[in-house]
Length: 165
Image (cartoon, rainbow, N blue to C red):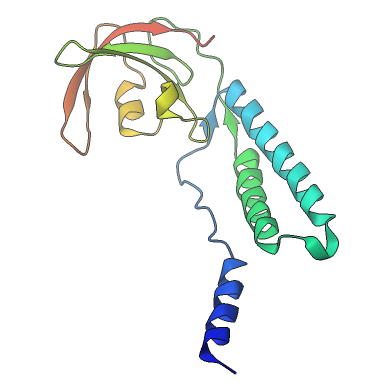
């Protein structure tokens, strides 16, 4: 047998074993909206898995293995979910709060603190356990907090806190 065939078989075996998603060690606090998104993700994955499983001989084994891995991860996240009470305070930052803050150059930014699986920096949804989230959590309007960033610490001032919509 050619050496090339041995390598291809080995590569195919590895491809069918996707790398497991790592589950964060931080508590899985999330908003009610985040829980809904997580439930929808699990339902979508279950549907895709069921569709892929019915293909018989034409099943894409790699796709099926990836779906099974993702289902394990998101089911684990769903079972560890700790839904927080809706953020209602305009005085103190909570998970779910919308926060407007200014940096040392008076540039303003508006973000919402959310759970890890809901976070999307491009949309201003920041993980409560991130360096920025930890700096803001519990702060009050007018507070200056130190945001410990890999590129250097930055002092930011809390300008406004809005409740969860």
